Image (cartoon, rainbow, N blue to C red):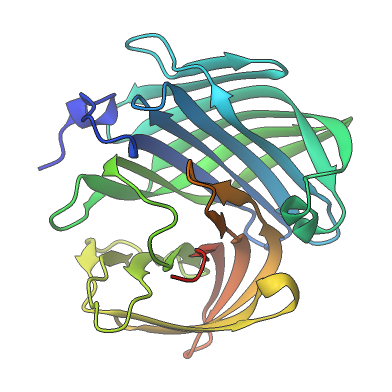
Length: 301
């Protein structure tokens, strides 16, 4: 059972790819803008990975990606690096987190430019956001990982633009070995316009049926799902163009509104592509919503 103590750092194991990560994402209710932050600690490699992304329709991709940040001090999730200051704070365990960010980011007109050297314009990027639980945490069966649907509010700063934000989001905390180059997967979460929150994930491996997830109806209890199937059409640069999902009782079409992208390089030189997309969802009964979907694309075996 997940407890309040699990919100903080866990003792690491010796495996080099053992990591502990905290994800926080947010999406405007109209799908016009969204972003996410991920802090990943890799004690075996002596570094942490820090990601902060913002995207939206008609907007450049704004990216902060640094895989050489020093590990935070014991008992802290604050990180400092050249052009980067960030603080992740648990205000109330299992209920309330805040994130502060001041950084210089790269703004790219084409999200696929992140696959081609991340060349773009240097821009100031800041976050002052709060994630408050919209329901209980969902614990993955048999894994040290949990998710929570959240309500997000605060401010986003991009260059001279100040965006007052209020909308749905998700947070994720996990610890254990994560191999970004072993197999493909799909992860998704969102909120429909009637207030229904949902989440699911699964390895995209033939014969593997492990697919944790939940549906949280408005005013109802969190219920685990009985399966997650996804069928994706890819466009240029293998960016997802459209998908259909059967997520427990929900049957949805998924249309990416904007993409975030990155290349992930393994110590042995293998490279995975990682599109994570701000999406619009439409359920077969007409309900619509917004959220995020990621498709890990590792190198061929």
